[in-house]
Length: 314
Image 1: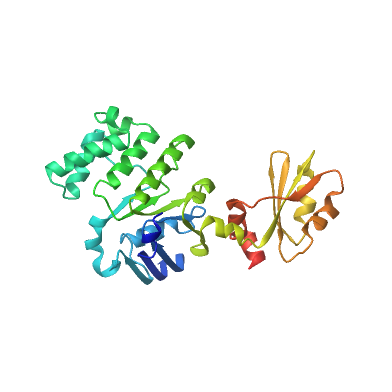
Image 2 (image 1 turned 135 degrees about the vertical axis):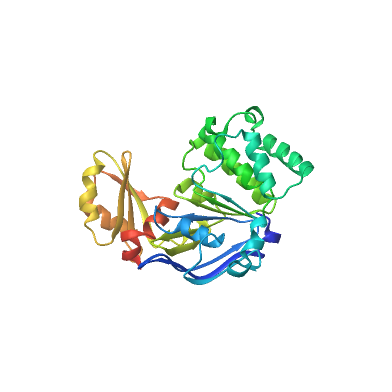
């Protein structure tokens, strides 16, 4: 990310909320996103990620709060923002009965690109997103990764200052997900601000900053590395034979926030208010298993900021 641009605020919202009947899909949400950042929303289905994105793009009217995007009030000036933002939905939403080239030409016309500008930009995108051999193929015949690249190409055809991506990699394989993120970093380096929602931990860790959402509320907000450094738990690892038998006795300890098995190892999160976590765990597992501290990861952050973990550490 270009540090010279990092103080310019692109998205700011305060006390943002959306109510459907008696249900608050999003409530009391404050956000600040700076130019050039890749800012992530991490959370389970139903946590408010998509609802928030729709409010920030002007597709939904908030029940409470204020939203400012690219220096404009979304409620009052939303129409003026349409040419400056891009939006890629989770579900492929382009025309399956049009070719790759025809889809790009159609979207270029929607954004008002003249013929020569559209031709130049489409040629650039076809090359950049490796669609040259597919430009005459119907969109419905593309693979998941190819559809993803086409959707991103159409979302940025007008060179938006701000790009919204709503779980854009949910239907593609890991290799295509990695390639997609390289494209996002290239856009970020050019000054494009990106807000992306995901439920993949590896993707969340790639973001410059990250908000963890649960039940419509923001539980945490910082860079992934700072979130890991500020964990309120000790992260311990137990290895040896038949570790699964240790899960129940360890989970019964009130100081233990979480126990999860990874192969032949157990990952145990212990409340930091306990000063002797290794001794605590050793009292339950005996001397036959190896026990030590291990490096925290983003999944630990997620566990401690949602569900039982959040309630126990609040």
